[in-house]
Image (cartoon, rainbow, N blue to C red):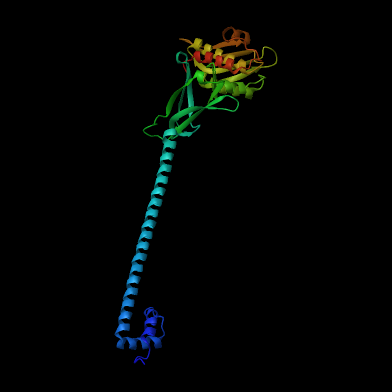
Length: 336
């Protein structure tokens, strides 16, 4: 019979549990006593403890490596995410910069100041300005409409080294016009014939009866008669033919020839725009070296026809109206 209370085989079977701390206090006490008297079991206990410790260290090292790797992956992912975010923001900013400063934005904050024909080069020159706004001119393009016509779209942008001029000028090639192109309130047909905003406005403001004085004044305001020739008072004759409109100017005139030529042109446009207006009269004070006399002049529809063509009420063509405006522009008066 063995001198040990507990056989070594049983102790050695229990060593793994003892090392893991899974034995009871009583069993652990017996085993500790056994280790003090049994070198073989003590050695096995030490070896198993070292092995388990080594395994634990290895596991810890492996786990730490995995943790470090995960941290590295996480850090790399964050870095990639940050780079991606920054790149996306930069792309958006660059796109916005290009859109705003290089391509511009569609706007109507401009004024068309002049149209000129460049027949030798087959184009219409459009001039304008962005005065009164923070924007400057960027570019223009022609856009097709559903009805087959075209429209000029003008783009503005903030001032920059690429675009910094408020005044602009661009050419519209006549051969690029399919039917008609609209530029602001003006139109140009495929023959290159321009109809200005004034012509369109006069067509819209047409008045069938000269007795409608507010409608008459609307037409006179469109023509800027007062700004050109000075203030005046109105007289109408609507009781019998020829129906007439008399403008009594308060101006003192030294160049009566230029004044009358200008007024004749205005009269042709007034008779074009007022269907039953048959005669236009005007008066003003004419200055001579030693005196001032009242000057009276007039022109009838038939007399206008001699230099602008027949002004029949049924003629409502904007192109004909534009020809009358061209004639008006040639009849300069010193005040304009």
